[in-house]
Length: 409
Image 1 (cartoon, rainbow, N blue to C red):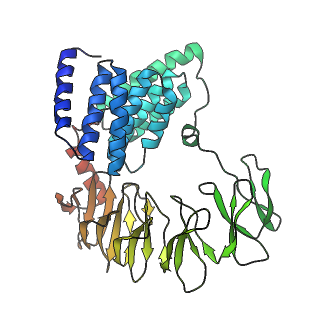
Image 2: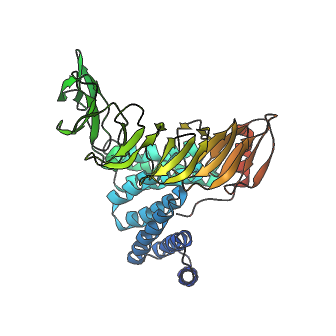
Image 3: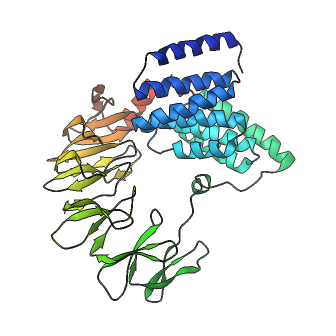
């Protein structure tokens, strides 16, 4: 609700002036998406939609997870106000990565819940509201009050019209087709649909799951792997001694022992020649590889991170382990037991100097040799002195520092 439209128009003019003097993708993404917020609040939804879509284009060019998620959320809010709920729901589902700060994730769930409420999907709305409470309800009084009001509205509407359709899964929202899964029939492997019926006959000694519509299989009469499509048709005849699943349009394969891993396209063309002792799947255009040490290559085979590290040791603050780079494009690398942080461009953000290091959505949690924990900001500068007994105390201190910061969507 807008109390003073002229004040918002003044804000929008200021954003427009700044845009005229801004050329970098980060700033343009931020200014355009904020201008979309202002236009939406003014009810000028065509202008808001144009700015929101352009903001997302600039945000995606940065490759920064949080910036992309904010642009997606702001565009989704505009689409919801226009009644374009299908696209809004898809954008909110795409945006909601577990690597984002809880504040932003809670806001995404809240807006997804409101969109579901608009459509009469009250069970789904309730799930989103409850997830927002799980993430932030204990520490955000304003969010708690809004969710309580929303759940009261859900209860009133459900009493009159029922709870509506069953909740959709993330795959449903993203319109992902569930591929058949490996299924064993006596001694051989085939593939079964979600109902358990074999849709690709059991004729393989080994079968890997489908990824990007393709799966590696090995017939009983050969030690070489071949590639099949979702229909079961053979795309690549038996050719490789060892294989990794497709990711980002490429798969690592081993043709001959001693030659090293190479990357191929779905038609079998070589994208990156052999030469790596070990490899990890591509994620957002980059893959971890090992020669004399661990590093990373892009999809053309260019080294983007020198192969001089003893290993990748990425741990996230929620306890998850990542083999290489996070969705945000960060990795914890190890040099003789000391941890540091690099990004997917090869830039060293934190030199390998810490006995332990954990990636938090807004900081890096670091430990001293004495077992005391502190935090660095995302530039690698000291944020919290290493005086805390454990990581939980540091995370609580970060939350106190962020008390007054909430994403504008």
